[in-house]
Length: 331
Image 1 (tube, rainbow, N blue to C red):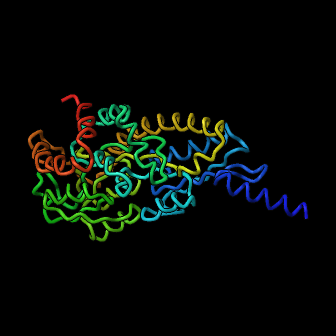
Image 2: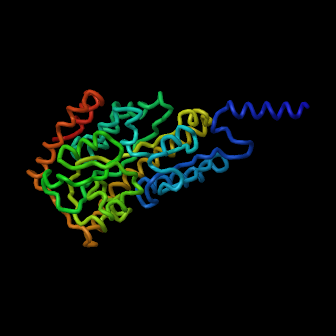
Image 3: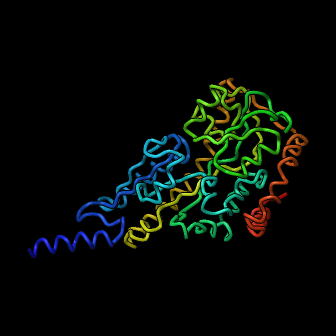
């Protein structure tokens, strides 16, 4: 009788202690799911995180990595995090529209002059505040992982905004990105990342926007004969965890994990820049896609068409957030 009461008490304590509470002698398990390949900056970051945790917290924490939507896909990953079925994700910032409107600043076209400006903004206090902007929804932001500036790939050459008119472009689930393509007369189509290659191959959509590394890792260049080097937008991720899960991790372990995340974040962001440059060269060397280089006048024409979105979304995002993003540019 006494033994059964003790067993029941231990079970109750384990339940109340939170999702990170592991059975005695068993490590805390962190399931890290993502939707891209292992050889992308995000994929490499997840694997490095797994490696460093294994080395520095042996027997205490076990990281399981699930790439390429192998555990949960684009449409289901956020709910899986909230349900604590996965403990770590690094979704595109566009995926958080349901939980906060402020992160839409990263989707505004031509907001940042270059990747260096993005990096500067992410180090500012206003950007750090955005990491905690979803706390009321149980989502805890850990770091920004960058994947570079976006290029436009298409079935026809895109020199001026009018060239995109009538084409269907795959977009992430973002009202801003939809409005961006509508501004140039194109049709935005929301699709999970795992379905983009087939959609481009079949002609369901005729274009997409991605950094060079995403284009290369998914072989999109093989079904997109033209790539316009527009650098018009940013693809960045937020490394997030379930708030309740994170709070339940013992303080010493959590501190070690935070140190590892900082180290991995620095690697991911360095790797993204280098990988995009390498993949750009590799795609062009393959001869599968023709590079469209925009003149200053052509780039300005795209910018002028899309610039009204800044004002249209200012109330949702916050004028203070947009101002903080603008001042990091050096124009």
